[in-house]
Length: 464
Figure 1 (cartoon, one colour):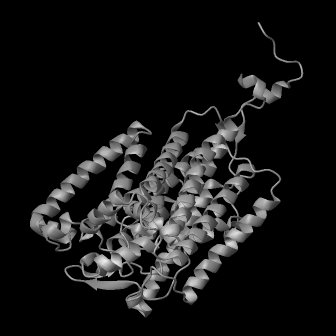
Figure 2 (tube, rainbow, N blue to C red):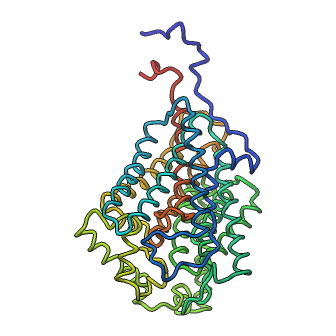
Figure 3 (cartoon, rainbow, N blue to C red):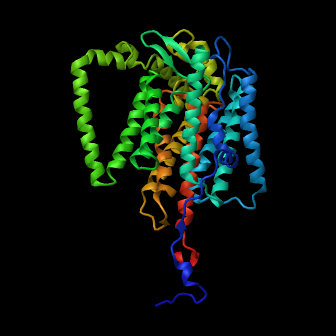
């Protein structure tokens, strides 16, 4: 029987301890981790572009501000990466991180057959700048992990600021953030200031999570959840409401598994909801509820997703004949402007697009790009869920060190996956939704790396 090596201190055989890092003041946090500044977008106070060929290069002061915003953060990331003595990222994280890198190369390759090479090249440049910010964040937190729960709370703070900015803009210049849609009435979409299809939902998801797991004052969490829910309802968009409902259902189901009391509470809540829904249905009438939920849209409009499915069908047919796609960003805008300038989809998007992040990637760079994008999303969500629910041998001071931040970020990314079926912003640089999606990915990968590192034995020879 082998004995322990005499040069190994018995204290080194102890399991590693993961402790929560101290929270930083708000300003210092954003200066220390500027990738979170990308969640701001930043806002553009301008009307949607109408009558402009957006498949070709076009500039204004807001474009310059947005590009400069990302460029400064990326430049800082490049300088820090250059100064780093070593760049070490766990193998499991690298295997996922290589997927957006390959995706970026496909986007760059698509420039060669894009109908608007200048704008395709510009967006490729922005895509890689964003990726550099993610990589630098992962390298940084690998050596010095932040307070992961603070990362989640700061994202909610950004969402609150932007939601307040949208409401303020609605009072001063309502045409920038809202519109009147026939059969719907006033729809507050946020325009170029901030997407109301993401930020209120971020507030609702994070607040619901912190409420259920008692990570902050329950009164505050409940209030902010209602704020986020109200923001979701005033968008009057069926797909956003459904996506939020799905994510909250997954959250509630996961929370119910934590204890018998939680399970009983959820069951009681469901029974009360069913009784309440039944009473409302009887009082209002099922036909009236159906009309309100679908905003008066007829069956054809519902079945075709407001005219989107016709566009998707033709775009899929094009990509079956041209598996490489149309060219990053510019291709679909040219295609849309030429063939779909008169339908409802064009009226909804104004600048052209797909209203679907997966379709956007498909038409940008083909089927291989779509496969890489889906694989990146699915593998990141799977990693986050597995790490957060593993029976780790790591001794932790509290689950808030990594489990709750990873779970919450995974739910946020899952929302992006669900909402991406009717929103192309998650696949287009210069949109806040695009940056937020990659910030969620960065949190999941970074926090997971913390767990993987802490799970390793102190001496490699002991793992044999």
